[in-house]
Amino acid sequence: MDQKLHYVYILRSLSKPDCYYTGCMQNSKTRLEDHNSGKNLHTKEHCTWQIKNLIAFSDSAKAVAFERNLKTRSGRAFAKQKGKYKGRKPTAREKAPQVTELLENGMTKQAIADQLDIGVASVYRIIKEGSLKG
Image (cartoon, rainbow, N blue to C red; front, side):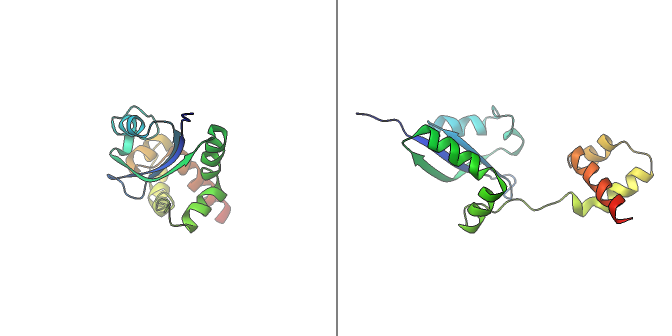
């Protein structure tokens, strides 16, 4: 009986080494090609990717459950503890003084996010954290 394996994988971006992606697949070769060709919305910004870890499961439900777990806070902590995931360096909070200055100069939140290469949600978070301190 030929049983298909299901894989949970952790990819690491070669263009941005602090960037990782976790997914689930059946065919590792074509899935990696999809990520590297920009077909995946979540990974196309940081092409080229390499497989850092690949875990095989004979049960697809267990593979999906493990993938979902890795994408949670406790799952990322587990992967970090095992040395399989390093996470990314937080950058948005380091730019809080710039966000504040640009807001005071009248820039929109979206324009600030675009200029500083951070998400607009990070701009809102910086504003909220700043208002809690002041």
